[in-house]
Image (cartoon, rainbow, N blue to C red; front, side, top):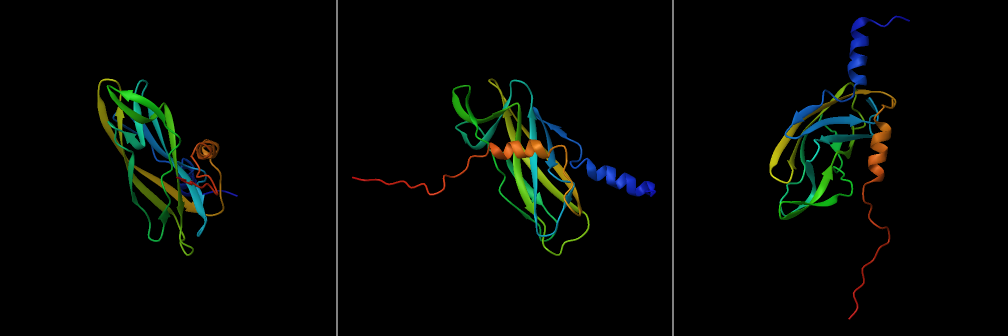
Length: 184
């Protein structure tokens, strides 16, 4: 079967999953997904990936005294929902005399999206992510406007699926059935 040239181009564009990585501040950001497609009413696992320059770090949701937590603003197709931006266990470090919690190297922040049951056609998820990178001497803010195109259809795994699965394993989980009891 021959595939028209325009269909082949569209398929190739969708297979890249995340549009080009964006360099800002002292990091490079991109948006990756476990699948190039979505199924209406079912979750799609995605993640923001930050690759920090050597010697620089970014911050956790509780950044400490001198940092700023990573934030994201979504622009989603009608009816789509976004889960919580998950954050792996951070490490502790010092920025000058200020303690902080965050990440160095490459860090992956998983987030799950769900399409409404009746949604069809291509979905273009958009997010503006902002972060702060610091070293021992200075801090530089970074931001990126990223877009993730997804086609309707059965799940088609990407090469990033294993990376996202590994990142999900690093997310702290609440202890089931845990109780705190204080006795006098």
